[in-house]
Structures are given as C-alpha cells and as structure tokens.
Length: 431
Image (cartoon, rainbow, N blue to C red):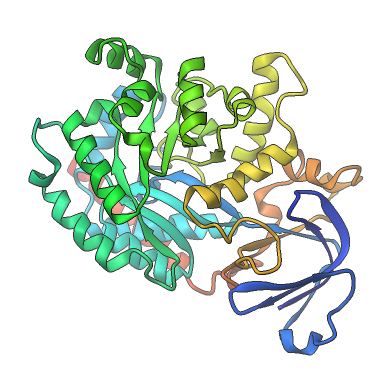
C-alpha cells in the first residue's frame, strides 16, 4: 500500500503534512515528501487527503475474554468486585467461552486502532488461536493464583506453561509471544515468585504482574512483609531483575518510583479502570519525570467496559492536570508515546511503535475532516483531546488490514457478538 499526500505522526511524534508512506510486506519501506520512483510497486494507492497516519496503539494490560463480563460487575470496590462477581463468573468460563470473548475483544481493538495486547488471562491455546486468526499481535500469559505454600513446579500451570512457551512463543511469524505471570503479591507466595523469575531468566522471556493497585493492597502487603510495599517486596526477591510490566502502580511512594526507574519496569497505566474501581490515580507524571517507562492499557471489560484506547489516551492526558492543579502536567507527545512506542517496547517489540522506515507496519489512519478536528492549530493535540476512536478508518498489523471502514476481514464480528451474548447468558443462569 502507498499512502499518498497524507499527514503523519513521525518518529519524533511531530506531525507533518503532505507525506508519502510506502508499505511493502510487513514493514514500512518508504517515507518521503513526494511519491517514490517505484510507486507502482506498492500496489494500492491510498488517498491521504483529510487523513492522518500514525503508529497503531499497543494495549499494555488487558484481560481480553472478560468481554463476557462487560456491565456485569458494577459499582463495587476491587476486592468485592473480584471475589463476589468476577472470580465466580470466571470459574464457569469454558475454553470456548474464552475464545469467543477474545475474538470480540480483538475486533473492538482493531476498530479503535489497536494491533497488539499484553493479555493476562486463562485458556492460552484458545486466546492464541483467536489472535493468530485475527492477524494481530499479543504477549500472552496464563493467569496464576498461587494461594498454596508450595513450589511453582507443583502447580499444574508449570507444566502447561512449558508447553505454551514451546508452542506459541514466536509463533504466527513472531506476532505471538509468551510471557510469565505473577498475578499479584496477595495472590502468590515468595517461593513461587522466585521460581518464576528463575524460569523467565533461563528462557529469556518477560514477566507481567499487578502491583500496588489499591491502598488496602499496599497496607496489607506491609503487614505481611516487614513494612515493604508491593514494589519493594517484588524488588527484594528479584521480580524486577527480568523484563517486567507492572500494571496499575497507583499507590506508590517516592522510594517505589525510584525502584521502578532503576529497574526500568514498564508501568501499564489503566486510568479508566483505576477510576471506575475507585482505586485512585497513579502518579504517572512523577514516574515519567523519574525516567520510568510508562505505557497504557485498558484492563478488562468488567472494570473499563470498552477497548477504545483513545478514551484511555484522553483520560491519561487530562486527569493529572486536574489532580495536580497544574495544566503543564503531561504533554500530548508523552501520552501518544505511551500508547504506541513504549507499549511496543513493553512487549519486547523493538521494531514496532514508530512510523519509521524499516519498522513493522503497525499503523492506523484517522479521518481528520470531522468538525471536532477543525482548526488544526496542533494536530497531535487534536488526536489526544478532540479525536475519537471512531475516527479510525484503517488499521494495519504487520502491513495487513485488520479493520477498514466498518469491515473486519479477519474476524467474524457478528458471530462473535452472538456467541458472547449467548455464553454470557448461560454463565449467569448457572451462578
């Protein structure tokens, strides 16, 4: 595909008008001020007038099959939400339920310019099948609740994960990757954590955890671990000595932030979920100032209700200004970078997340001719504060179309909707 005369968000996150961008295979092959000499070699020419081409978004923390729980567990604090609603519902979910829930989640993400997710959940083979068929990307990890005081090797999931890493890590031409998972400090034990870190080091993989999501979580952790916060506890047992994404990090101290910066832990900010569950506001601006790599996630659909990351982008840009009473906190560049390049890096995808020659063609196109886009005093500011996920008209993953103007060439959206609705009704009737 050759994008002709189109505005772009370049690799410095500046916007430029009237550019030509060529995609060959799975990569960005050309960026210039005029058509390339071999323009005919690119196949379809995409008329870029009134459009903006930017890197696609990377969802750095999701629980994709939780689309089945959308609107189900409402107006509850985190622990009651988990224990009274989510866990009983999830206990009834079959592998096929997870497959269809993941299908619907991926359709929603592609609709809103997202090409990849870091997904912590169950039924990994079914999720991998869904991602592969959709032509999208994912770092998958199998959820682990380790309440029993025994080594990781004695949990059935240990052998399962060995198979999953063999079967799926690097599959689908690298679009699929396997991470390991520690759900949280309060759902694990020290030996399991240390065992998992050893495996991740040995295999050269990545780790995905929840950390410091609520005030209560931090206070109870300090009681269990001689005054250590979850961040300090995880650091003390080596969890951050491997590439790690820590979701939430809402209740963190200056000492915690210093650890996250030193260890270069990717913090997945989930502003919609954190507000909906009344968990609080992660001090993202302080983390960025300290050099912590911050990315952006939706979390699951029981605590956010949609995968439209442009909403999360808007919230991240806006809420810290009000929280700090400082309008200079967080710039559009910082927020867009978090949702694109830093999200890709959190998945170990070094050649993704930028509009740059030689990088993977993970791209989305926005229609910028709507009234909310006028005037274009600053196009990137409009992306963050005026644009909508519904402005996305095209999403490419590795150069292949996964969404275009109301059509999903790789996902049967209508069947996915019907399956999710029926399966949700069945589970609710069983509870």
